[in-house]
Amino acid sequence: EPEVTQTPSHQVTQMGQEVILRCVPISNHLYFYWYRQILGQKVEFLVSFYNNEISEKSEIFDDQFSVERPDGSNFTLKIRSTKLEDSAMYFCASSQGGSGREKLFFGSGTQLSVL
Amino acid sequence: AQSVAQPEDQVNVAEGNPLTVKCTYSVSGNPYLFWYVQYPNRGLQFLLKYITGDNLVKGSYGFEAEFNKSQTSFHLKKPSALVSDSALYFCAVRDASGYSTLTFGKGTMLLVSP
Image (cartoon, rainbow over all chains, first blue to last red; front, side, top):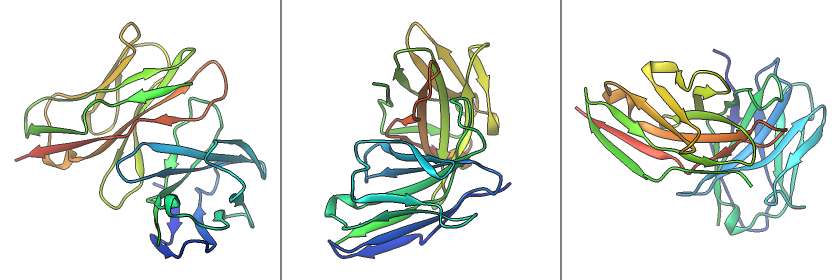
């Protein structure tokens, strides 16, 4: 079965540094998402992306966050100036369609630790 | 706002026994409901979904879930648990009345003992 791949699996950074988390969605999927999970808490929606623009974002996704599809395969999440509270597992997901009925395919996540 | 509650952080069950992982939800319209499972060092994997129709939904690996509109619940069940079912299980909801994000619960760890 095709998979969503995420790199790196672990990222350690200093507070205030920029990080880029990378994802390769499934090749024929058109909708892309980022979610995160702080340890012991819920999986939270960050942003959805379709047709090269953000279609929806949560209040977590502030000006420090940005997403990009720089080429035909990669989908990236950038955090401009990391804070301690950005430490979390970040999941990328993709789906073929954007209706509520669609199941999402998730990557295995990037564990971000901000020191 | 839509929300999902998974009241148990952990469920323990012996192999061969039936299991239930509980989930209740809140949406303004009709719900689309999902269960995902996460094995160690893996991403969330889709198990099953309720969209419309029969309230009992069957999914992967012998799991099923029952949609109960009056109780706003979507509990995950399996008649006979396997040790390999041990994983983290997430319930999720989307509002069917319009485009909305997928909202997850915090997850329930299922531990099946031999």
